[in-house]
Length: 481
Image 1 (spheres, helix red, strand yellow):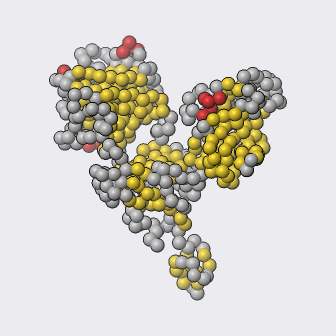
Image 2: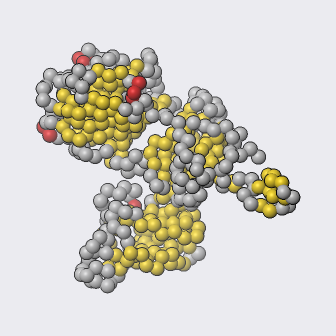
Image 3: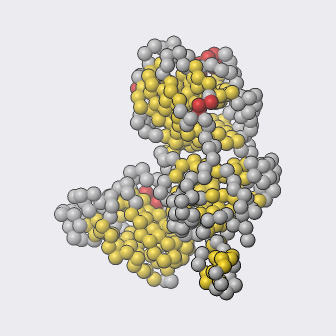
């Protein structure tokens, strides 16, 4: 058995190929350090003591919540509330509750299996919104969670339950569950070809303590079905990531007012004038951005004057400021920030032969990071469709809004990409300040390869100590690895 040295565990991941994918195709993969958290699909309110129950399983931690219909006195229990799902193998649950002083709560948790309720946590003094409270237990196939919540405040109180999740401990298509066997999540994760030892380049789009979104570059031709391995559980492995992010240090810069600074992964603009002719761009060669594509980028705006306006992402076939391309009857796709009349917006644009089309997130906010996945899907509509999926977190889990544009007149390929671009509209003293960071540019085909459900957990071959010799295998002696 070929095995990547030093790693304790691996899983095989099947990928269903698709004609046209070819070699070195980047596939997205979600990896969970412990459980794969999934939302309930329903609720039971046996005493009709709650309202807006579905807010607690909408999958968005956004301040909306289920709430009790009435207050209860200090030392009393709120009405029970149950959340349901089709039978699901779980080893944990989690929830977010409003429990800050002077409204602390004690929470008891039950799970339902074998035609009965089973208590898994007798009493837990809850952490408050937006902190997740987790309860773990031996794996069971369950269909419901029940909360029994006590008011331990000094007076009457309502109960607010913001979000509830089941902790699935089995893999699903495109999702790998590692069951807390990483030593340094997500840094000790590696991917290999189907030979088990040839490492594959990969990068992390975003991660937190429990989840990481990867892009894995599969060397084999994904025009047909292929397998890869994910390895994990090696002490001191360190990060093995390649850099799929755009290197801005290699971008050209036009900056007459010296308002722009660059690092390899970040472009910062400070008091960038609306009437400036300033931009940071890369010539990727003619027709480079062809067909369907997926780009991921972080936008952040600190401040803007009334009328401040700049683009943080643009594809075009001319080198100029934003308005210069439009006035030249050019074509472009862009995502820009605008502050007309103090009305802060994110604006998705197509300019087609000088004619502008838009969809808008209104309002947007200053001092707020936006993580944006921009997708051009040429299989949707006559000439393709452009989407901007706007998230509040770098792991792209909490979706705030989706902007959509049906593209016009023809399918267009683009040569230049901009990471910052002024408008040059002739209005002085209308500035904006912020940055663009971590731009991933992924070409994709219309019908993507499909990442399947991983295989069972495999453990590294044991080390056999016998007669003073160290060998691989399980033939007599003592297994120590």
